[in-house]
Length: 115
View 1 (cartoon, helix red, strand yellow):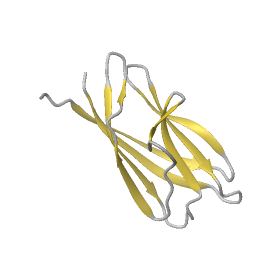
View 2 (spheres, one colour; view 1 turned 135 degrees about the horizontal axis):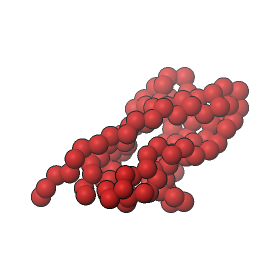
View 3 (cartoon, rainbow, N blue to C red; view 1 turned 90 degrees about the vertical axis):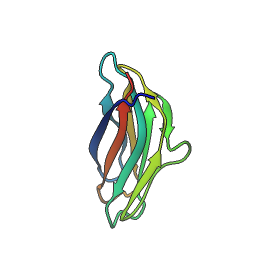
View 4 (cartoon, one colour; view 1 turned 135 degrees about the vertical axis):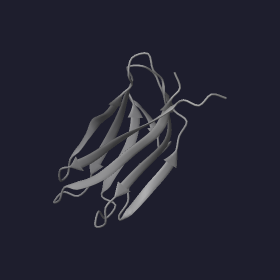
């Protein structure tokens, strides 16, 4: 089995107090297919599980399969086998349930180009 070219995408997400939205983290290059192998999310200490994160392809949530990631002083690692085609956007949906303070996290997507 031929291995593809390893690739990673990193993004810091900062969510204003009480905000919710979507951020494009990566658009797959023309004539390429990106296979997402792992998602890592670093939630700094003091977050109080207020920041919720999920990864989408268009309107479909791809990871986690159900629910949202949240944390406080931890790194969450989750496996995936999702494939994103040329031109598809990998989106991060965030929701900050803290109405008085901004919250942040660091996201790292790792995988490979399989074509």
